[in-house]
Length: 84
Image (cartoon, rainbow, N blue to C red; front, side):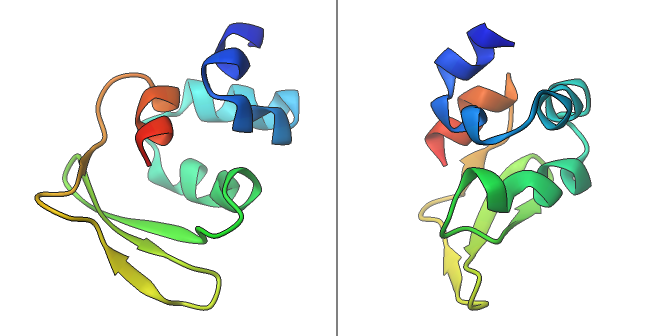
């Protein structure tokens, strides 16, 4: 887990249990969404189309479209969260 936290330092905001849940269920967007607010202060939710993140939604429900085709949601969760 320490390796994952070093790769994505915002994981330090999560408990060990929350981090294990994210890492073990990285394809389950409900799990990611549930913990997203603890990792990013300004991102309340993300919208996806397939394996592409298309929008970020703020706590104030402001919707921001990502440029181009969006952000690919592939590989290790810490990698695409770093890109986000």
